[in-house]
Image 1 (cartoon, rainbow, N blue to C red):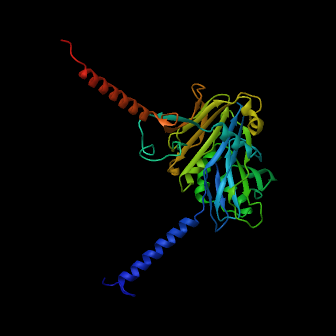
Image 2 (image 1 turned 180 degrees about the vertical axis):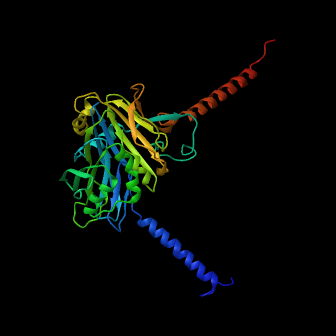
Length: 367
């Protein structure tokens, strides 16, 4: 090709284009994540952090809301800051890791076998199957921010802040080695207008010098609430699709007030918690009051469309629901496919009918 020699026009343009594409790719890989399902994650300078699917528990007894969350992070950051807005002053403590395991067992799908008569792919004689089946698919002096308190919780350095200006939060972050992105400062303004407060947490791995990666210890926040709300607005800053798993425990079955820019929320479980389900971590969280558990899943393919927080409300009725997943299996009797028994029975009947007709024709006719 003309100009494709070293030093030629096409040669130079091609290498320039490749260098630009490589720079963009490297930049996208190193770009920090400023949002997760609930709150904002800010990595240290020249590092990146990613947040996978976030699962949270919301418990509301009519006066107080508790949010227990567990973050699973990746990337190359050795430390990061996590900021979450709350409508009222919150108390913060470590959560119980067993809570998520117990709720996962309570809301696990039920598997049922669905039989079919005629053979399908994988059934004899079209193939072999194992019979198991597959389930269906510190603030700076004079700044408008106050540090309510600050303490160490396990690997977390937790500060409870009040702020009247998002710029005030910048001071606390600067003092702790983090930089408040301009996009995040803008996204915080609606919370400032509503006079919400912040919980700021400095995250660091348990081993000094290690990378912040994997499942972190859960945190539990408690604050006064006339109605339950799950903050989601900051997730609009996320650059990748977001996925939310939410366990809501209240006196009645709960639902979200709207889609807030995501796909339609899907209820995967709804049911009242009995005495057995209240054992362990679940019982320690909900106490003795009425408890109806609703599990909700929602995907946000385009986080930039998120336009508010999830306001949770009681559903029209406490209708129980549980996800059922089916596994298809060939109908058998004594290990033999029923369809085959049917075919054999039909063949035997046909043979018997044929013998009867032959014998009848051979009988001598009366004079």
